[in-house]
Length: 75
Image 1 (cartoon, rainbow, N blue to C red):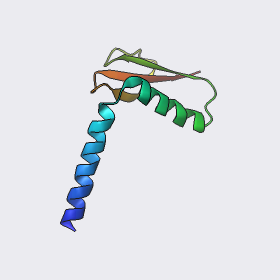
Image 2: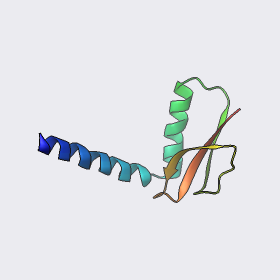
Image 3: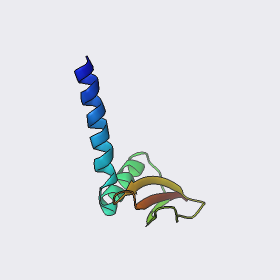
Image 4: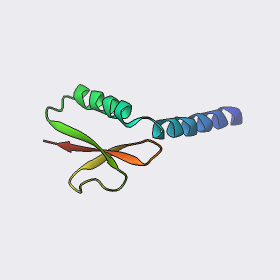
């Protein structure tokens, strides 16, 4: 049982590290596909430097090793 828990823990850490290092355009495309699948008609996704996004937008992803954010605004 301990081996299973350790394996799951290591896989989750590896997945987080991999996702953080993704190229921004690739991650932006994946996020857009999920939003489109939920039927959201009008939205914008923008890649910005970490912490510099406008206050009226929501951070929905982090890319390039955590140095950039992908921000979402509906409407």
